[in-house]
Length: 508
Image (cartoon, rainbow, N blue to C red; front, side):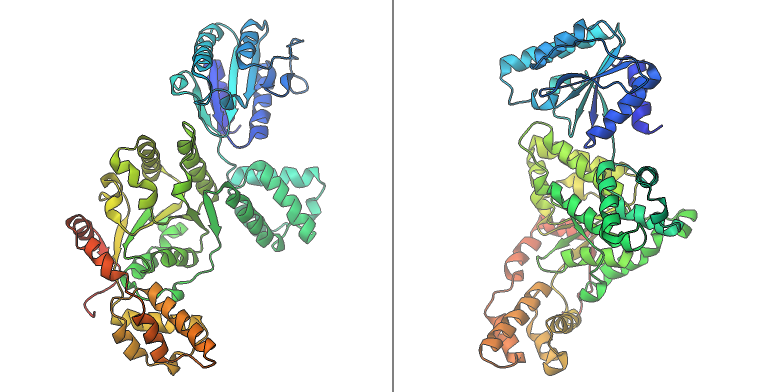
């Protein structure tokens, strides 16, 4: 029996007459309710604005009384439930679209009062109303009237059951690898999917490969990437970028390397804690985002880029629900890295008292504090002074690192990396000279200058030279010239004191 079923049975038996289940898996919730109806010997009746009342009691259960009438309005439907003579669980679908801040105030007030009155009336009966929705966005006046249950995406054990039952139903047992390690890898590849998405992906993997074996793993990962990116909140990255592509940031790299082994069984047995989060801030173009991608390769974990700006929806409760859904996906995929780029753009409003932003930030911080799954948050920021104090206080992240412009040794390393990246031989350039001349230039600016020099030389039908790269540098004012004033502000300096330098700066 899964946790959702247990909590639902407890709610029904304790006469919580109104229950809201937040889930993106309506069919799975319906199956759970059918199992509950069967065990409690109750009828199960669904209602939505299109199909109206329907008896969906599973075979062998107690059939609902009929007829239930073709009731289209929400108000009339509630009256019908109140007058229903039998014991039943009523499943209401799409109700949250009929009961929100777009509903006319006079109509909304009546509906809210109807729910409150119905709750009192149903407590003396064996009737229960269960509302299913992707996110809870009912009026705040009803928050205390509904018991709230969140049905998470299937975990590893549930996905294995789904896989085995699916191949049995399709008679594909012989096509499923018998190797337990391969089966485990198949399940890891499917983590983060809904039950229905997992079944569909298993079927597509079989059709594409003829078997469900190690060849299907990359296909499943690609399917997962496509599905996850449909929600606009998360972008899935494979662990392909390595630390070899990151120049400089010596102290930050050492910190990350030391924590690679903390995710092992050996570390857990010794009580060594794995990192929960890291905040990297400083000059734009300093390599913060590239490092986040490279950590994924170092730790061999998938990377999810979380776009905080897209969390905020136009309807009441939608922003908080979007946040929960993104975090639920991350936890389902765990172990993984949750990368939040330029975090100040998403949470800046919280410091100004913006109510929705403050609530969403509160939800996120609570999740960071209480999460049990291996989801390591790597947050990056440029202007960290725009973040609220509670976000950057000591202990919120395992560590904070400040990134400034690279020192001369780092610039040498970055120049060599970028020249090779753009198919140029470093031996053909005066690297020491360029390292000296690029003081206060970020890694991103060094790469841009190399690209510009290469284009200019190509148009002149020649190979790029050291002077071409230097000319490209001279044509652009370094971002540090304007960013320095921000870093020198008292607020920024105070935050830097609480952080570690990402790299040594005594060789500038």
